[in-house]
Length: 114
Image (cartoon, rainbow, N blue to C red):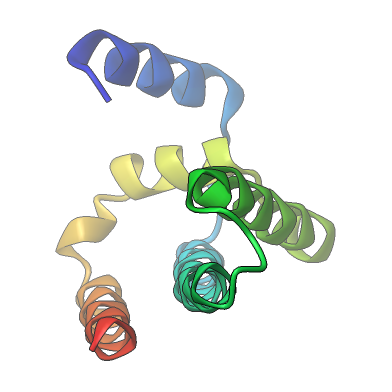
């Protein structure tokens, strides 16, 4: 994402998003990232099996992300904009629980890629 697009996205999140409970935000991010790992694995298998063409991969992954975001909204009332705003406002990158979750997700992603 280029710098201008990133600034516009952040401005939108700041006006549209709301700050949510830190634990709920971390849980939502975990759900999103774990779903992403599963989606990537499933798509790779589908491409290898000839069930979907390579050029359709980004679309399939985007649909899967939308599905998980819809589920999170229905279950927790959290939207994508809320997550971005909460991460920035509460400085979750500095939070030990957030760092631990991020490390766990990176480890799972590495295993999935192996």
